[in-house]
Length: 100
Image 1: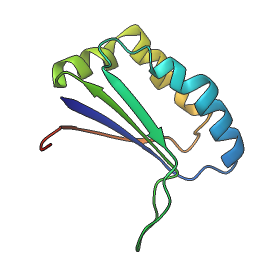
Image 2 (image 1 turned 180 degrees about the vertical axis):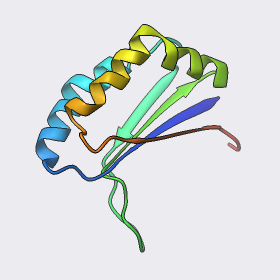
Image 3 (image 1 turned 90 degrees about the vertical axis):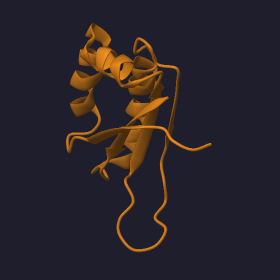
Image 4 (image 1 turned 45 degrees about the vertical axis):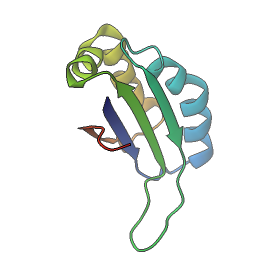
């Protein structure tokens, strides 16, 4: 299993971000080809440092499936949609899921 993680900084308008993200962006991201499952959350800080405002995780069978999804037409639409709710952008990372 391979995980794509997207971290979003605190937006200037949290309510507008949440409304657009939940109602429009997540349903679009859910159509990524090869996506096995996904989740998102609005975490709270625990300890020093600032927590991201929002986190998304999408799971794929392997890195190749994730890369194919991101390079697909849907992947390009998902990427192009980000400025509509997160003008400050997002940080993406990915990893092979290890452990239980």
